[in-house]
Image (tube, rainbow, N blue to C red):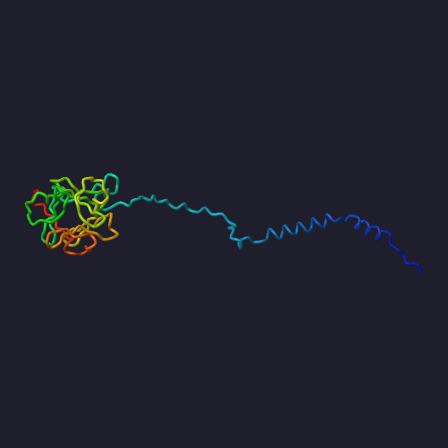
Length: 222
């Protein structure tokens, strides 16, 4: 018994198979992929999906050095190299009276020692700035020699004002002044007078000793 075959069904199925191609499948896959990518959230990677108009913060101008409550100088900050030493009226002219009871004096032969005679003109000194704050030089008004410290710690009168050993660091110990040699500051050598009026060698001086304390007196220059 023969089975009837519907030719139209066969032909339609054959036609449909002829219409299919691999490119159609590729197009379908790409469309599905694009849909998935469009739905994918990217917030996880730190990217902001929305745009905002952030307000601009005001910029503050930094002024340096900062303004002071005191009266400013012409440049806005003080020049320590121009600070005057001593009394504004009398300048740096003074006598230095040691706490051991002697006036510091510089003599023409270059010797530096103490004297009890307050009228000795070799005790008339001038303390001048050495270029930095608290750095000074001590000059004898009569001899025009500068007090200096040599490598043995002895004091002497130096002719050359540019000699490094003539510079001292002035500090305050109560009502008294102390003068530390800048060249030998690492050794702690001060200008000092003993109880007998002789100079005290630098290696025997210490901070706080009576021998290193000097009281400025300006009565002779008023």
